Length: 508
Image 1 (cartoon, rainbow, N blue to C red):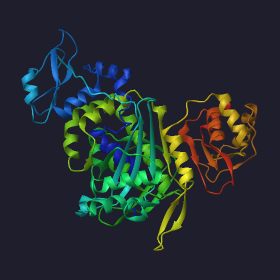
Image 2: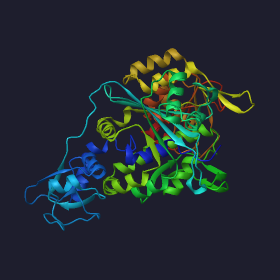
Image 3: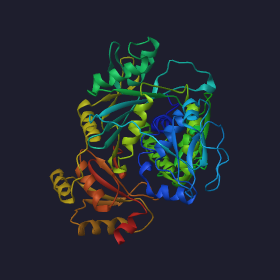
Image 4: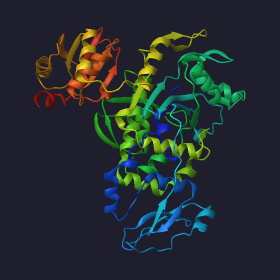
């Protein structure tokens, strides 16, 4: 039950080689700062996606650059990475014939040849939905399968509006599996692979299950196992990834790869995690929200990896390691995405802003604890609320003005509470007065259960999304700080849980 849990992490990191992490490279191809950094290091790169395309396919066209220009990252038939000073190359640039027939591992050389490619583009304005599956597989234990999915994520890409929706589905959701009857959603892949289900085995049945229960047509899938995680992180982020741990985590029963356990702990605060540590952070369930918290942490890791790859060093690591990574992932994924489709989607992602990528989790507000006919614990979905969540995630409204958000919040008439999650005396009272000056009435104040919170968050108890969004706008908080909650701290309404950053907000 607890074994692999790599959710968005498996997808985001495995895809850095195949789909390049969807969001991980969503902006770096257009990053002027990155180009500046690379130029300062002696390289000129017009388009990192072009270089990635060359690394994967070995199909590049070169032309001579003008004398005196900085060396470029280009593809050669050799098998080593090397750099030379400006205007000098240790090997001559490949001729068009050389590149066309090159089949060995491609290589980057600093020469005076510039790569230019006509990359495929998405011309169909219709939205595309991709199902991401993480299977419960451990090669260390010599497991052969078929496998249940520990991860199911829907990625909805809308070329017309240039938006992306990311929705995580819990594995214990009790749904109707076509041709098999009621069951946990994570068994669809197992059943489909076991019976060689027509149209693609397990992934095909999983896609049909999504369509049957939620009315979402899924066109593409990517199925990834768990073992590539550490090697991918080691290749792309050898110095680790910066992650902000928001609460203390103590897991004495973290599962290892041989059915044993380890004791892992995480202290709150910014930390640089290596691959093994990042994996543990992504997999543990030892927080109050269990699987739901884990899904949010894995989406957090997805964004952290994106930020790491956005750095010049991260891009260089990616470009120079693209082909080894491509080889590393062979046999560790299945997909009906073609390479041209992957490249076209990457180019589209380069135009999508971070604020237009929307993350959501089907959590305990959208499903209730229940039992299967066999007496096993499952999650009974509230299909009405889930479909509402899908609409808000996949088809978000345009950015509302402060006045529009305020009007919607006033219609909700939500009770608003401010709880102090720090050791700063009087912070809740000061925040209440500050909000009152902004024409926001606070129902009550109190101390939170923790006194070491670093970041302020907004918790929603009930259907008060507009109020939460308005408070986030007033406080200057990102949408990721809004969380649905059912911890019973308040019966209903919106709770502002103050962190150490709140002092600067109310004083500045």
